[in-house]
Length: 165
Image (cartoon, rainbow, N blue to C red):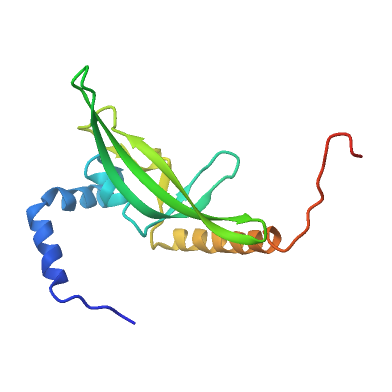
């Protein structure tokens, strides 16, 4: 079923008119493969997007963005403002006999030079696109996930203790 919201297109167009920085951020991401801290990270990492992350000891891991937002804190002693971008991702792990969704958050501190963009390849997450390379990667991740699900549930494992053999 498809949902139609009357006036949504006009509303979104008005947002684009009122906030040209959003369009500029998307344009920079697409044309230069770089991203600004604000509003670029928010445009790149919007909820619902598929990502590739690289946790230690796992290799590449597919995940989905659940939430993302900016945080700004002022240090009253120094008067300096600290800005961060918070990204909440979700992935599947096995817990006992079940596969469950687990959420994890990552934080991007403000870039060292907020006036310069950072190359997308230097970020700790990579947004998956719709191109043929990413389609093959998604297919490989899907196959790996199905294999993981088959061995991670309904199997009995041998417990090992030091010097038990």
